[in-house]
Image (cartoon, rainbow, N blue to C red; front, side, top):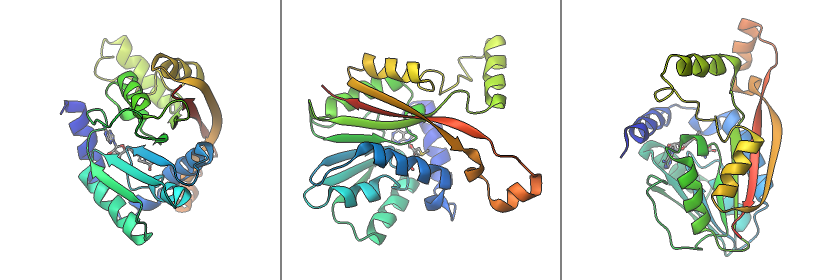
Length: 237
Ligand SMILES: C[S@@+](CC[C@H](N)C(=O)[O-])C[C@H]1O[C@@H](n2cnc3c(N)ncnc32)[C@H](O)[C@@H]1O
């Protein structure tokens, strides 16, 4: 496994032990909107890449029941264990989760009606190759990919950091993971290059205040600010 993937796995393994890992308001909002864009139908076969604790997987399994099922894949054992607990707690029989690197996974061509990827693309070491693989797993022409990605830069400090790193010749170590997918044009271009058609990219504002507890906000007197989120829907024609 590449060094970057090992670091991603280790950091999400560590996060998976936090008591509130299944109720992160940022991830919940991204997952909810992703599902709204996905418009899942009863009977559909869904692959949820980089499943995390199952915030997309669990409601998706309810939406496609009966007849449909959802398969989740995540590189972090800790996240997968948490997702399995959430699947069991929801009493679902049509959802399963496996540990695995989605960049190395293989599924038969045309196996799924829908691939969902919420807060997943920026973690891919080779996002362009990952998109092309996901397209191959989708049934044509009806298969669709539904994903989201924050806009770049995530905040001004991040933007400054990546610019300084580039200026000092450190772009290879500290490259903005949102550089390409974090704009409507960039995301659309990536999806087109991966062979998708019928592309739609929607930009929404996302209140970052949701990331902070009310107590934190009161303490530092922070004002509301927001970051953009792009939702992409693409067809595997
Ligand atoms: C920000 S979380 C999003 C989780 C989930 N999709 C959600 O919306 O709640 C990113 C997840 O991607 C997983 N991940 C990162 N790289 C991965 C890879 N190459 N293969 C599978 N999972 C990966 C991490 O372990 C983590 O659970």
